[in-house]
Length: 120
Image 1: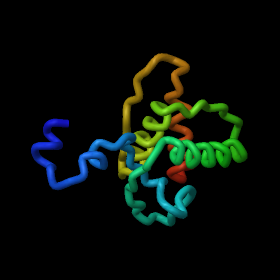
Image 2: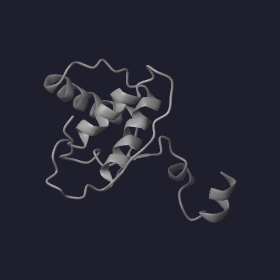
Image 3: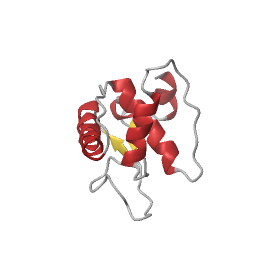
Image 4: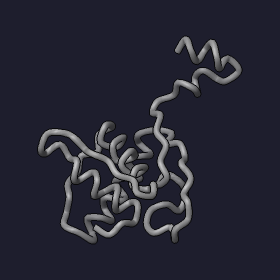
Protein backbone atom coordinates (compact mmCIF):
# COMPACT_ATOMS: atom_id res chain seq x y z
CA UNK A 1 0.00 0.00 0.00
CA UNK A 2 2.91 2.36 0.66
CA UNK A 3 4.19 1.89 -2.89
CA UNK A 4 0.76 2.65 -4.31
CA UNK A 5 0.53 5.84 -2.24
CA UNK A 6 4.05 7.00 -3.17
CA UNK A 7 4.06 6.25 -6.90
CA UNK A 8 0.38 6.41 -7.86
CA UNK A 9 -0.79 9.29 -5.70
CA UNK A 10 -2.84 10.86 -8.52
CA UNK A 11 -5.08 7.74 -8.63
CA UNK A 12 -7.91 6.94 -6.28
CA UNK A 13 -6.32 4.66 -3.66
CA UNK A 14 -9.61 2.91 -2.91
CA UNK A 15 -9.93 1.85 -6.55
CA UNK A 16 -6.26 0.80 -6.75
CA UNK A 17 -6.60 -1.53 -3.80
CA UNK A 18 -10.10 -2.82 -4.51
CA UNK A 19 -10.74 -6.52 -4.11
CA UNK A 20 -11.12 -8.76 -6.00
CA UNK A 21 -8.37 -8.07 -8.50
CA UNK A 22 -9.74 -10.33 -11.23
CA UNK A 23 -9.89 -9.87 -14.97
CA UNK A 24 -11.63 -12.31 -17.30
CA UNK A 25 -12.29 -12.48 -21.00
CA UNK A 26 -15.70 -14.08 -20.39
CA UNK A 27 -16.86 -11.25 -18.10
CA UNK A 28 -18.08 -9.00 -20.92
CA UNK A 29 -21.52 -8.67 -22.40
CA UNK A 30 -22.34 -11.38 -24.91
CA UNK A 31 -19.67 -13.66 -23.53
CA UNK A 32 -19.78 -17.39 -23.30
CA UNK A 33 -19.69 -19.79 -26.17
CA UNK A 34 -18.00 -19.50 -29.54
CA UNK A 35 -16.70 -16.02 -30.30
CA UNK A 36 -15.92 -16.73 -33.96
CA UNK A 37 -12.17 -16.42 -33.46
CA UNK A 38 -12.41 -12.82 -32.28
CA UNK A 39 -10.12 -11.58 -29.57
CA UNK A 40 -12.10 -11.07 -26.39
CA UNK A 41 -10.84 -8.24 -24.17
CA UNK A 42 -10.04 -8.82 -20.52
CA UNK A 43 -12.48 -6.90 -18.40
CA UNK A 44 -12.42 -6.39 -14.65
CA UNK A 45 -14.80 -8.39 -12.52
CA UNK A 46 -16.22 -6.02 -9.94
CA UNK A 47 -17.17 -8.55 -7.27
CA UNK A 48 -17.30 -12.25 -6.53
CA UNK A 49 -21.09 -12.38 -6.62
CA UNK A 50 -21.14 -11.25 -10.26
CA UNK A 51 -18.41 -13.75 -11.12
CA UNK A 52 -20.29 -16.51 -9.28
CA UNK A 53 -23.43 -15.81 -11.34
CA UNK A 54 -21.43 -15.92 -14.59
CA UNK A 55 -19.69 -19.17 -13.68
CA UNK A 56 -22.85 -20.85 -12.36
CA UNK A 57 -24.59 -20.01 -15.64
CA UNK A 58 -21.75 -21.56 -17.63
CA UNK A 59 -21.68 -24.57 -15.30
CA UNK A 60 -25.43 -25.04 -15.85
CA UNK A 61 -24.87 -25.03 -19.64
CA UNK A 62 -22.01 -27.50 -19.26
CA UNK A 63 -24.15 -29.80 -17.12
CA UNK A 64 -26.88 -29.78 -19.77
CA UNK A 65 -24.49 -30.92 -22.49
CA UNK A 66 -22.20 -33.29 -20.53
CA UNK A 67 -22.18 -35.48 -17.46
CA UNK A 68 -23.24 -33.52 -14.42
CA UNK A 69 -20.54 -31.83 -12.33
CA UNK A 70 -21.50 -30.53 -8.92
CA UNK A 71 -18.98 -27.80 -8.18
CA UNK A 72 -18.85 -25.51 -5.18
CA UNK A 73 -17.62 -22.20 -6.55
CA UNK A 74 -15.84 -20.60 -3.60
CA UNK A 75 -13.59 -17.57 -4.14
CA UNK A 76 -10.33 -19.47 -4.71
CA UNK A 77 -12.03 -21.82 -7.18
CA UNK A 78 -13.40 -18.85 -9.13
CA UNK A 79 -9.93 -17.26 -9.17
CA UNK A 80 -8.48 -20.49 -10.56
CA UNK A 81 -11.14 -20.76 -13.29
CA UNK A 82 -10.22 -17.22 -14.40
CA UNK A 83 -6.51 -18.09 -14.45
CA UNK A 84 -7.01 -21.35 -16.33
CA UNK A 85 -9.31 -19.60 -18.79
CA UNK A 86 -6.66 -16.95 -19.44
CA UNK A 87 -4.07 -19.66 -20.13
CA UNK A 88 -6.38 -21.54 -22.50
CA UNK A 89 -7.18 -18.33 -24.39
CA UNK A 90 -3.53 -17.92 -25.40
CA UNK A 91 -2.18 -19.70 -28.47
CA UNK A 92 -0.28 -22.80 -27.33
CA UNK A 93 -1.23 -21.94 -23.75
CA UNK A 94 -0.40 -24.68 -21.30
CA UNK A 95 -0.15 -25.11 -17.56
CA UNK A 96 0.92 -27.67 -15.03
CA UNK A 97 -1.75 -27.89 -12.34
CA UNK A 98 -0.43 -29.27 -9.09
CA UNK A 99 -2.50 -30.32 -6.10
CA UNK A 100 -3.79 -33.26 -4.15
CA UNK A 101 -6.26 -35.60 -5.78
CA UNK A 102 -9.85 -34.46 -5.52
CA UNK A 103 -8.99 -30.76 -5.24
CA UNK A 104 -10.83 -29.86 -8.47
CA UNK A 105 -8.01 -29.42 -10.98
CA UNK A 106 -9.73 -31.43 -13.71
CA UNK A 107 -13.23 -30.10 -13.03
CA UNK A 108 -12.16 -26.44 -13.02
CA UNK A 109 -10.18 -27.01 -16.22
CA UNK A 110 -13.23 -28.58 -17.87
CA UNK A 111 -15.32 -25.58 -16.89
CA UNK A 112 -12.69 -23.13 -18.18
CA UNK A 113 -12.37 -25.10 -21.42
CA UNK A 114 -16.12 -25.08 -21.91
CA UNK A 115 -16.25 -21.33 -21.32
CA UNK A 116 -13.49 -20.91 -23.91
CA UNK A 117 -15.46 -22.91 -26.47
CA UNK A 118 -13.17 -25.94 -26.60
CA UNK A 119 -14.41 -29.44 -27.36
CA UNK A 120 -14.28 -31.55 -24.24
